[in-house]
Length: 467
Ligand SMILES: Cc1ncc(COP(=O)(O)O)c(C=O)c1O
Image 1 (tube, rainbow, N blue to C red):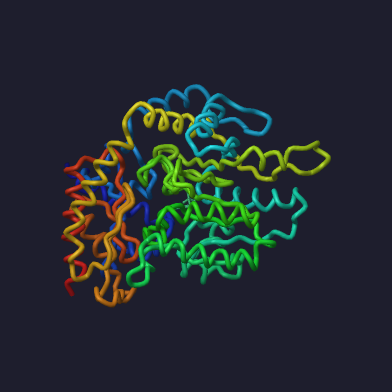
Image 2 (image 1 turned 45 degrees about the vertical axis):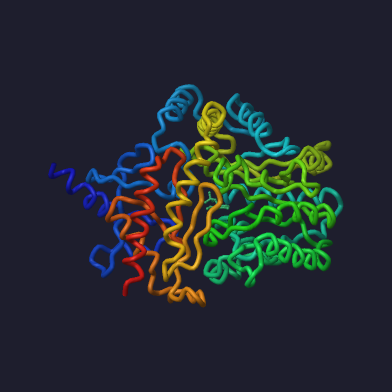
């Protein structure tokens, strides 16, 4: 019992002696500091819950950085992983292949939008973005268009933190800090509905953003490889959401101006937005059918149900063929990672996709999403909540100092952090993005657990805005 009670302190102290954590001012964790943020050692996962070394349980409201789909330590996925680990853990993926990678490519080309028939593996989301950017550039180079060297990204976008991925992201602090190291994309306005003018509908915002993109393409398409977007939800940029008509318009503009469309579905893929992939929700121009096929689709996070790092870039046969030639032509794509196509990760991804096949995941999510939305309604009238928005299993609440003018709280007050600390105290993991409190739970969450998430967030918000 004594050991259990001291478990957190002992492990946290060992951690803080040597480990440097991501996206963290480590000083926040100084246990002697004022307003110290706990470093929480997790020893076990169980469905939507995480258990710390003192035995305290936390409901994972953010799917551990949006990776988990079917629960922590999911027994079905764990069994597949164990079996694969006893069979083949890894093999070089150049000149060699294996059944899990082959079967996963077959399955991914089957479930993604039409025309994405080629799969290139990498091992995390940022690496997938690097692959897509390089592949797009290299395609144009192989086609005799070496003058195409630029990319168009959207305001408020986030595509990862390696230098290429960061280059096409628009997170002010990161861009400012690393500016001398980065490529400079052209920034097109996001269709984010938060930016709507008074009386403007989400679809009208999308049309306005497309008109601005057209102007940019008219000037720069000749030197542009691709437009890269997060379909429907700009997640790290504050769970900013936009109308799916933007995606249809983007597809048409990319075709008209001969630039690629890169869909970064790393965070929104695998059912998060209500469909298996967000691109499926784009309305067809004719009003029939629907869905768009990008030229590149980047997948990661939920791809392995949150078990292992793996990413995939899907592209078309036509793009693949631009690299396919006699060796001497020097057209081969130049990119490799040691763990490309790791069999453990591929096997786990196959099991994750098998769960989508065997269970009514999207239908279950629809009910959960309705429940989540209904519970969040109560916050719409809150004097410090300027927006409550939702796309499928992603919902967000925007805290502000002043509702009418939407004036934010001064960033240094870290109001969102207060919500985080309140959540931990009450056994709920919420990790606001600044003052945006969001919900992105694993799909195995129950309605009662959603109630707990929302009730804790509401109490946390009251505390966070109270002084
Ligand atoms: C849309 C999007 N793209 C890319 C990434 C980068 O993925 P990773 O953290 O695996 O490098 C993220 C991570 O949050 C993301 O949300």
